[in-house]
Image (tube, rainbow over all chains, first blue to last red; front, side, top):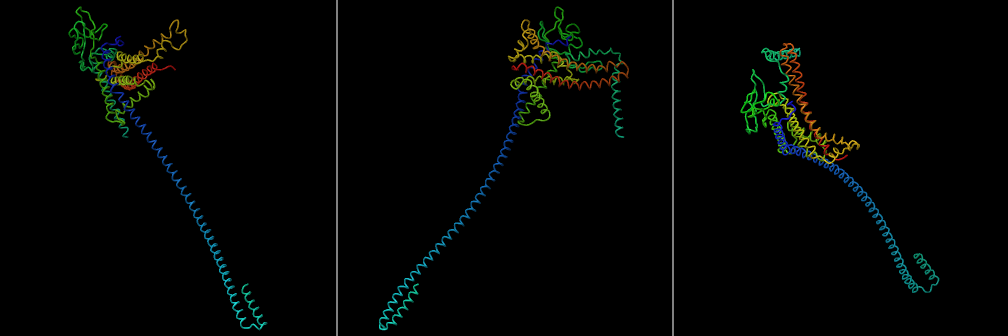
Length: 166
Length: 355
């Protein structure tokens, strides 16, 4: 049956045309299309990857900024605390210094007063001694004879002097 | 209310259509024509021809004459139109054999008076159909490829998008999965060409008039060339494991040593695989064409049986033909897919390294 017998003419043309089509399409057809599609796919994949990375970076940056902010706040707190402490300390120091100064001044004043007093006493004493001598001279000059009276006067004077001294 | 009216109108149209369908053949039947030879009609349609038959009008055949290219041993090359050989006429020493071993083919009457077959490279109906479909295929694919050159990095839509989807589906789901990641690229062009060649010819074959109607993929020569290409693709570049599996398969030794039963069976398998491919495609498409033709002939067979039977059979025939044409479109895709997938599978097996 001729349905099942291959025909030589058709065979020839089939081989020629199919071969030609195959050569043309395998050179300029399918590989070009497949390459283009794959390149596009790679490009899309790459873009997606880049976007993902950018997102990640963004999240990273956000976290980083949050961290930096928190750190800054912490530092601020620490600095504030430190400053406060320092303030207290300075005030304390000032107080202490002032107190010491006052004490010193008071002490100095007391010392000076004492010194003045001693000096005054010394001056008074010498004055008294001089006075006594002067008195004594006068007494001597005036009434050497009145023994009893003299004695009384001297005693009284001396008492006065020692009273003053004490 | 309007729905009912519409329905009535619809029936009216269908009735009119039926009337037209019935009366045509009925008139034809009155002309005392010989009985319809279905086998003749079917075979003449599914076989190759030297003219592209379109229709018959008032007893005159309307067809496109095609060039006949022959080379006889006595006279050398001859190129002439097939119109010269119409209805048994002869031209130079050539004529179309009406009977005998070369029935339907161009034969040459030699000087000694016997019929011999010259080397026949005529552009027959199938050859022309192949040339048309090849041109169309090249045009379609190159146009698609060209689109990418003009639109780098863009996604196509419309026809180009459809082509891309089809190509990438075959490439990724059929070729890559069957042959494997390492080797599939070198075979993808052949398999894609085969797929689209078969698909396009299947689809063009369903169209009943020129440039369709030729039974290209239902011709054993065409499928033989396609299967032959697969045979070459399988065996020429096969790996060591493939040949080892054929000549020393993993079977008990007594099946191989005194009498090499299994190697023989395996060796036979080298040829049965492509032959199965060839027969499958050929038989499917040829059968599809035959069934549609036979169903169409039903109308003309029953033309002489009275209007009632003829009308009934016409409706039935149109219904079945519609169904079969739908089926054939499915088969067109299916057979192209199966051929490609099986070829890819066989190539994959030949490339497989040992498990």
